[in-house]
Image 1 (spheres, helix red, strand yellow):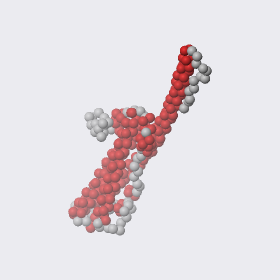
Image 2 (spheres, helix red, strand yellow):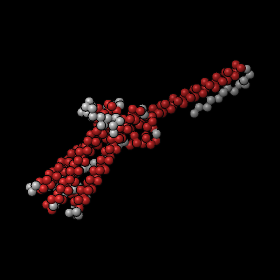
Image 3 (cartoon, one colour):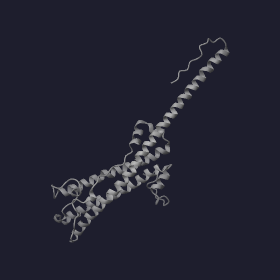
Image 4 (cartoon, one colour):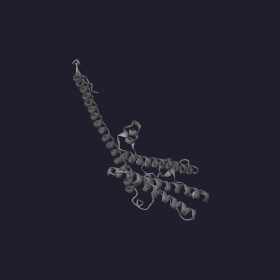
Length: 254
């Protein structure tokens, strides 16, 4: 802050008084201008820093999405083989289960993050961004919440399948293929049907997770590529529906 001081000479005439007032006003204008200039460059630095932090996270997210998509594809193939064995058993055919140490189950899933954006919302610096940028990041945050919910449902379905397995084998591990693989030779027709439904839910959940990962990853990449608004982001993320009249994922349709 700059302190403005009036001239110390004694005021004797109206002219002196006007000079006195003018000096104060000019001093105030200079002080306010300097303060606003400093604040402008400070906010500009904060905004650029926030944007750079978000870009780093989005870049990491695109790599995470690619890795998770590969893991889910392998895991889905394993579950399909397992479900095929169950269906074959239901029809009285020979059924070979995948190996209990099948490597397609290896690897853990990671949830993409938006930590800088969330921190900016908490401390108020998000207001430094333009309304269009905020809407873009809100769209990303919305997709991430949907993905987070799907991940939670995935683990719930996995726990339900594991609980079914424990009805027949308490000694198996709670992780890896053995957490969902059951000796189908001991299952009754009703139990086979129940088991097939549980596996079907896991496969369906993977399909939804893959869909949301694709949309989220495409939106992250769109922002990294310089997309300007929600409409352009929607077209990038959903090229097949952009002109078809299907606006279920468009801005304002959540």
